[in-house]
Image 1 (cartoon, one colour):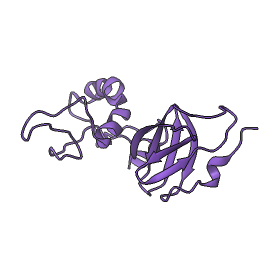
Image 2: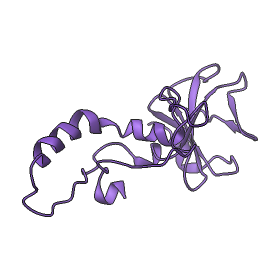
Image 3: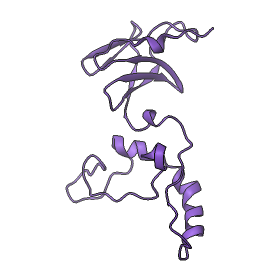
Image 4: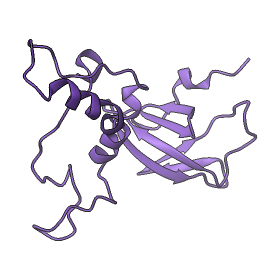
Length: 156
């Protein structure tokens, strides 16, 4: 929906545990410990800085027509935001453990190895996995942890 219609201007939810961490039942929401959903919203969070002031200025009076309030999405790949993200430290064998899988990091032209570096594992909606070091995608894997060929491209 975000790619086709844009970023939604607001979202109303209940206090479900997939939206918010609440340390005590009925207590305040822990805003310093976001869920995967909260992390994705934070990454889409340019709304408060850019969108909200423009929205308030434009809609503080009655709308002259029936325009959509959705903001066109012009950011990065949504599959890298709307997924689970987990941090791991690379083991001495240049592999990481993710749940019951061992993911081998393939050779690349940027580093000899990634031992002891922090990487991000993204589990996408379709179950596939991606491995990132900073903004650089290191590899893609199927849901069973098998390396996918598209991620093995070498830099010429």
